[in-house]
Structures are given as C-alpha cells and as structure tokens.
Length: 362
Image (cartoon, rainbow, N blue to C red):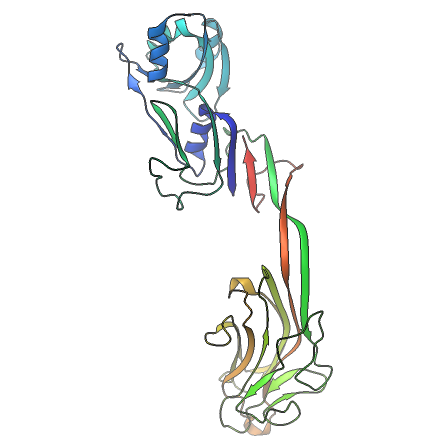
C-alpha cells in the first residue's frame, strides 16, 4: 500500500510513524527549567514580542492526559487540537506567553512546534533502509525536528484519520488478446484464438506427425504422448510471443491414464526459448485423471517473445499389461495483454483489509 501525506501536521506525521509502517524521528532539547522544549518553541518564549500570538504545539505527557487536562488549552486562552486514544500526546494552539507555565507541568515531557509538513512517500528508500541526510524522504520541519519516511506504507489505526482513499486497481483500459488450440482438427498448426501462435507444435524423439507415432493429436481429445515403445522420453512443445504483455493466463485440460503411480509427466513453461524451464504441473499415474487447470504465468516466468509451453514424459507410460497409457492436454487457451490502471476515489467505507493498491490522504 502506497501512502501520501498531504498538507498534514507533525502531530499526524508522528502518529503515522508510531502506528504505521513508516518511521519518524523527533529531536528537541531541555530548556532552563528542565522541561523538554524544542528550539523553535524556546525561541518563541525568548522572543516575547507578542505574548498573545497563538502557537501550534505538540504536547507529550508522561502518562495519558486525564479529564483535568481536557480543557487545558482553553484555560490557557487557546484551543484544543488533535487528541489520540493510544498516544500520550495531543496538539493544541495556545498563546506564546502560556508556554512557560505549561512547560512546568510535571506530567509533560515535551513541547514542540506542530509545524505543517508536506511529504509524498510513493516508494520507500531502498525498502526501509534509513535515508541518507540529503535525499528525498528526509526533511527538517525545524532545526530540532526532522521527519524521515523509511517505508511507503501506512497501517490503519484508530489514531490516524484518513480523509479519503484512492483505489488504484481499477482498469483504465485493456488490450486483450488470445491464443488457443481446441484440437478440433488433427493438426499441429491450429490457431483457435484471436492471435496466431509463433509456430506449430514440435515433437522430440518421434516421427513429427500428429497422426502417427508416440506423440499424436487424438480424435476428440488433444495432443498426447504415448511411451509404449519404451524408448526415448518424448516431448511436444509450442511457442508464443508475449512481449509487451503485463498479464497472461494459461488454461487447459490435463488428462492422463497410467497404471502405476510411477508413470510421471510434467507440463512446463519457458521464457527464454527453452533454455530453462519452470514446472506448472507434475502429473502422476494411478488411474484415469481429467481436470481443468489455470495459471497466472506472471507468477512463474517473465512474459517475453520466447514463451514456450511443453508437455514431457519423465518416466513410465509404457502401456503395461496391454493397457493404453498416455498423458495429454486439451482446450488450451492463453489470454494475455496490457491492462492500464487508474486511480479513483473510493466511495465505500475505509476498512483495514480492503486489499489492492491505494493512496491514503491524511
């Protein structure tokens, strides 16, 4: 989840730091009375030119402020700001002349300016590594207070008031394509989708015909491998160009009949023309099996111009005891294309587990 802090205040930023996935640092120094006061606030006290001037401050307590503290800002001639359920702090706007008296409160550990901050944390700096001193993501709001965003996420918390949430998972336009092979014709060159495969099915260690041999297109079914000759382990493969796609879904029916569970085959894919392979499904004998399958190829390989789909026998399927043993694929469909997302303001209530990718505005 990406976050954006827009025209917020340091009080909100500090709350996000403590309860979100980001981290923030606040620095200040003790004043002459022993209370901890930021340099900017100390300067206001020392200036003393306009004691009635209202100053925005963050007040941090040793123990959570109680009822006696609730109307403290008003008693000092000011106004209450943010109050937090879990944090031992609050923000307020009070006259500058009241800060010295406030700093003598034994339950107060820090008084700092609640300075406006503006920050966009679209991505973490090398993923939660502490930023260097002079880079985007680390900035000073005063000589004594620095804010460093170490991660781009902000977790949901009752002390963070999200004003609006932008849903960035909505399709903004899709270029959808399809490759298919239904094997309605006993051929290796079928193109049953909107686009054309890069080439026909290719066998290895067989006769190259879809009608004869150990690799065939079986009438009414699909492309199959029979290893009844007990020789080399056959394979069959087909290539496609997926370059430029940002999604690809491969669907097919996987079917097989093997007498023993030692009969084994694999359906696998490659993104480099067959130099390396990634297994999608391992098939084991032990009776008749016929089941649909669907895979998001982006979870397994890169989407390139050198995509290859392959069916391969790895062991068995020898036709034991006169049974026909085989493994095959049918109803192959490869949906791919480019989907562009847009960001729209969410109208539904904001919850902690909405999923997707969002931008939060505080």
